[in-house]
Image (cartoon, rainbow, N blue to C red; front, side, top):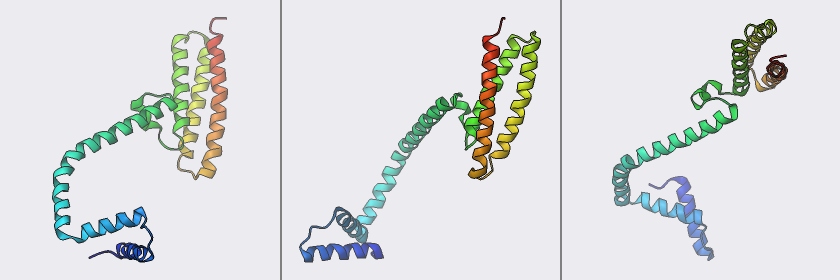
Amino acid sequence: MVGNNAALRLGAAALDKVAGRKPSRATRLASSVARTLGDPKKTKRLMSVGQVVAPMLAPVALKAVDNVRLLADQQRAKKLGVPVDDVALYRGPTGPVRARLDAVAAAVRELKERRGGDATVTDFADRTMTTLTDLGIAVNAAAPMPAARRKPTVAAVERELDKLERDLITHLLHSHD
């Protein structure tokens, strides 16, 4: 039994022949598929070939999908500045700002570890970590928001992160005054 669309295409091919036109490639392909599927012997043969070939092609197809996903994860990790294993933590529309928050927090912790004896650095690190915690809460609250409300919230968090990064660089550059 030929489907309605295939019948229309076959009808179009017949009209093309009557009118003396060369049928389009799509029309020829549809006619060929309709004829093949309409023939029980050919259909049975195709099913048999499919049963033999599919198990051989499935592992190759899965490996190809894995490779494409790995490549995409590597590109995203490079863009976010995080290890490939952590890419899943920074998915979604707020992922990039979360990656920045975590990077700044790690840098502040490292600064405090290296120069924790300096009261100025300790005070800066404590204030910055409190601010980063608050910004993280804001980003978590913004994640489920509609885009029209989320984007201004994320932009405000990014502006605050820019200030924190400038202050961090200042503390790093003026390390031994």
